[in-house]
Image (cartoon, rainbow, N blue to C red):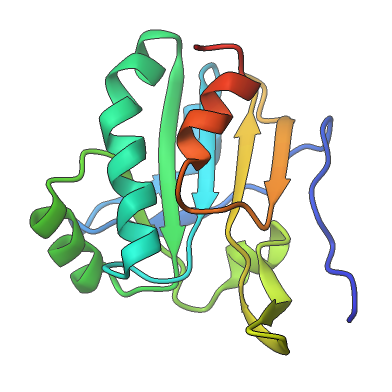
Length: 158
């Protein structure tokens, strides 16, 4: 299995501008000055991804109260993300990376094992950035269930 380029603490995160589910767009560098949690997930409206998005939504107010913004990125089209937001009452920012260029640059797309087979796909990942846009925490191959609670503990928020 080939090793993808992954971000490490201290790295300057690659900038991006991606469309959101509501027709606007988000540019990462516009968020400098605040801490940002960027998480990558394979597909909107699947059980694991729904659980993770709902967990981030449930934690959003407390995360924002200590200076974090949350961006969820998947290869889904904005229209599907809009349905995901509506269906599950999500309040986090949902971004569309249809060509997977951001995922690839951040090490969140590539070879992974799925049911014992090596496949190309989205690697469920969470990257936490500091106010300068540098990586503070980089977690790859995270579990959907329980991840937000673990991340909160890792960040000293619980």
